[in-house]
Image 1 (cartoon, rainbow, N blue to C red):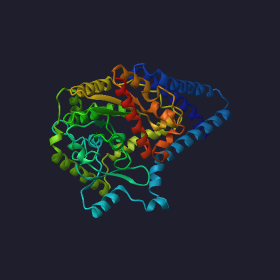
Image 2 (image 1 turned 180 degrees about the horizontal axis):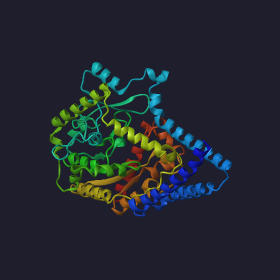
Image 3 (image 1 turned 45 degrees about the horizontal axis):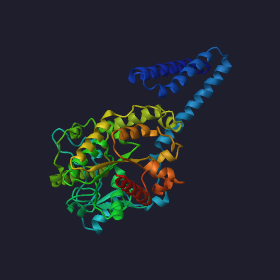
Image 4 (image 1 turned 120 degrees about the vertical axis):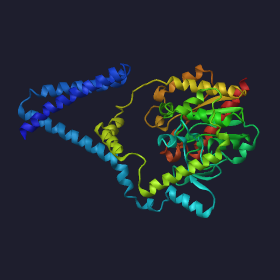
Length: 451
């Protein structure tokens, strides 16, 4: 046993040397030496780790064994914590507490509505979901950007009730009559915030703007949308209405991450080309048919317990995350710091959108939405958190007016978290949507009056 524990000293020394070399490979070859600010902490940890175990080789046997036992116990505790934290959500879901037993699932709500309302009731479907499942071949097929049209849509839940809305003729969260207006005053593009997660119809940005201004407003926002899909939605549904004001909602947490995925879709990239369109405006019957087929496939998978993801691949990814102590590293902020800058494509998309809107003398406004965690972890005044400074600078250089919700609203609040749903969810409460809508309207009025 003593010999085995003694050999662990050599094993730990080899592991730290290997990790130091691997860090060098990642930093200097994968990232070309451009991410030293991220990797330097790993250089220090693994260098001193290797140095420490080299020194332990010269300790007396008793002391050496004590250190090995202590360190091995520590490693065990770290991986035990990581494993428990990783699988805790799955374990807890299998043991619902009493208050959860009576709560309805999304499927329950949909089935109940089908019986009571007797209308077309569907779950919400997002472009990102179709893209991630690779269910659509972008080379030969059209790609829906909205949901099922004229249907009771069960959206999401952040609190006691599911967000439910009646979709318009193109599957978006608007009263259908809005499309009867020859011209639209307000046109909103964005992701789940713009779609209205997870409030009731009329409590979203577009709904609040309609109420406060008495002007027409249409939202084509859908959950998971990134900059390329947002550009596509603008071009497919904005041209015929030629809105006076276009609000481009940018969410700092994931919009740039979404772009890293979207840009590999050959169809989405085509929207950078002048005049490209899928003519989705005239294909809603085909879109509804396609989306309803997709919904049935998803329901079948859920009923049969099938997973759309390869289970072997899923197990490997889970093992890899645990091995890398992903949760623990995130808690210790060790995984923060990689800075890839802003993809030049993002700037091209914004310029493309601006030029497109200028063809009918419309006006583009960039609405910057901050992440809730900014106000939890002390980053509220950090201008470089989630590339905020770089994004703001880019948009200013493009001469596009910015409505900075972080600066104009949240930084003026004594309790910014109170404007998020139940103080724990990532989207706004009805009050949050309402107050932010007031800021947007006021800022645009100020901009117009200054001219």
